Length: 80
Image 1 (cartoon, rainbow, N blue to C red):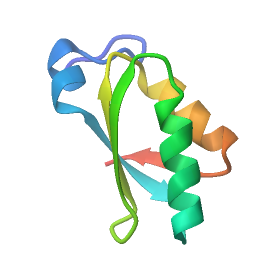
Image 2: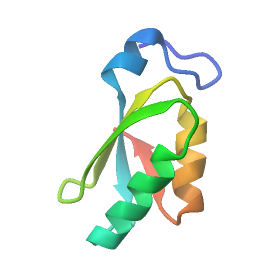
Image 3: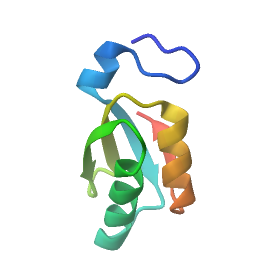
Image 4: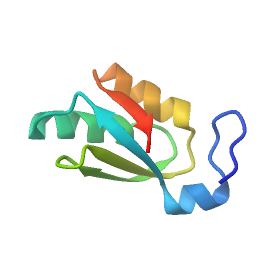
């Protein structure tokens, strides 16, 4: 998967990009993370697994924008 300046390749946009979410402990946290990721321009789908603390984002956006949006909601993302 090739990235330049944080932009996702066409392949990554279709398959999605996976993150580990730090600081997410409850359903309320999961909703906050999901809503923050959905508000990023270009995001077409978000899948969050609270038990595994993972987030998959699909769409034409960049990693920095997703990371910043979720950080703004109070959580930390790491690439999975």
